[in-house]
Image (cartoon, rainbow, N blue to C red):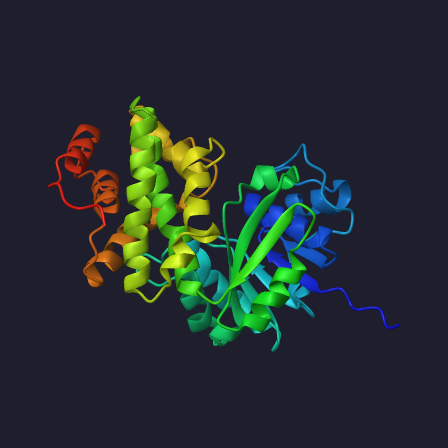
Length: 337
């Protein structure tokens, strides 16, 4: 009996979520190499099987390797997993694209909207690389990196227009602690992941201001409603937003202190400025970067998104915390449906 060849996976980059997905795919049996920008991170992963930048206390699989050379990482890769800030995706991909193989499937972990164009990460990927959408998948769901590293149970959605490609990605990241489901609704998965970050900022702000669980529940529920309105207007299936990439991701990001967007919002709610909250946050806060782009999409599709509108005004210095709260609570009453 011929033994099936293990998949070769290149993960770009060595941030918290990229490291966690690299662990998942290594545990699932793939040959994984992580591309790190800093040589000290790559060297530490290779020598100590730990990522000192994000998880110095967590051991990585012994089979997982790292490099600073993008060409070496991509040589023979079956999958290229992209976990970088959305706003730097275009420039980074332009440099990496010449090294991507003709059959490599690209997997986006990014949860943001490009500010200058309003494009989703998968759209930027196909535009920059020329790779067809059928070879670009999205992995999204309620996945807090620290819990994944601890092998706590989690699930996610793998979305790709080509269902067979989605199944391939699913098989490459299915472990005893990580359960992926498949979908063909890329739009729904990406918008669920992008907008939930904005809603999590609102929940964090409410928490920082000392507002209670009623306010949190209100923001999560109405946040899901406005996310669904936008996604459906752009061609998504409403059921996707009730699933792991929608409601699931929204609840995890809005509820957990491990969520960087919720934490950023909490700092704002306690009175820190945008600059002070940014300085206190080590990692990219996609909600801050994408809020204005999400609102622009809503306006372009004539979709009402009051929470996103208020958060954008707050981030742009056009509203105070009290004004933002009043703007949401003083909206005219209407049917819930």
